[in-house]
Amino acid sequence: MGLGPYGLARIDTAAVSGGKVVMVPNSAPGDLVEIEVVRDHRDYSVGRLREILSSGPARRAAPCPYLPRCGGCDWQQIDYPAQVRIKGELIAHELNRALDGAIDPRGLVVPAPDEFGYRSRLRLRVSPGLRLGFNEFGSSKVVEIERCLVGLGEISIPHFLPAALGRGCEEVEIVAGRAGLVAVANLRRPPDSRAIGRTRRALEADGSFKGVIVRAGKSRLKIGEVLTSIEVEPGLVLELDADLFTQANHAQNRSLVSCVMQRAALFDGARVLELFCGAGNFSLPAARRGACVTAFDSDPLAITAASANAHRLGLADRLQFSAIDAKGTAQFLLRAGYRAQLLLLDPPRSGAAELMSSIVKLKPLRVIYVSCDVATLARDLKALRGSGYGLNFVRAFDFFPNTHHAEVVAEAVLT
Image (cartoon, rainbow, N blue to C red; front, side):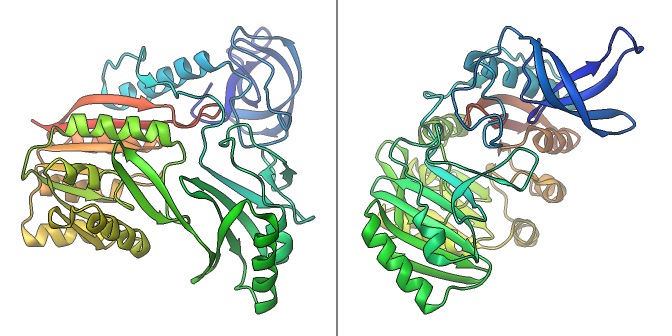
């Protein structure tokens, strides 16, 4: 398997010297397959699986009835222990290659407590028939679904919502929290009064959703009750509107927060800087341990929620939240002569390459980097290593069983 949805194989190894690399979806390690080449490039091809001639030892029949058409779960054909092992091997290989390291893949990935029924958030597309589903693998076609095996058991699919909002509705996210279900609908243009009225009536008639947030460009409309919550560690619950980012796997997020706090080893008055702080997933637990936290995020709604939670939890005197993008934050702090003992960062999939030079100038004693993309993590850690930081710790968490994704925590220390 590669760092993505494809298995990597070679075509006709007996006939061609070395065999040309082919990327095959829905494959498993050890499979012998017959494929149809759908895209041919100079160095590799992309194949469509036509027949499995013999199965590899990790292959299983995918439990989901919508596979292999649905593009939501790209590794479900691999049994779960093998998924965890393969993720560990891929993560270790990528980091070792970038950093000339010797990370042991064994035990590197913390398995999820549940292989199915773990996702608190599902983002669904709207079909031409105004039904909800996931994109077909490699296509913009929508595979309509009635239930998702990786979603929490209480999640229902609100097919009524696109019909109420009309054909401008492109996407619906379902969010499950401690107080119930909320839907977030993304539209091409703001809804008119008739669509809003239909949505209110549909919500009342359905009864399983307590509210909807309708977003269209800069427009944002709340219908009903839209507050949701997530317990990030025992006794610490974040409350925020459902359209703000939270980790989709609540159980693994608690493990992730626990790991980060253990590595942080905070003491009373420790100076902590957090970039990409969101609604306070790490900032609030850090302040709870006595740290003085300065935290930044580019989303003003997330910062508003983080500040409100800090006040509600009695932690506001230890926290300073600001809505500034990460690049502007680093430049501002450099001018102010700020220096943190610990830098926390949890950037988007694209990583934090543009920040590395500023981070090095800020000279935090330690950096804890949480990443959802091991390739960009490896790139950014390599930049830190070139400026006097040594990799001290790596641990991965399987947030998304049956997909190729994982969350990785890395700690770098100034030497």
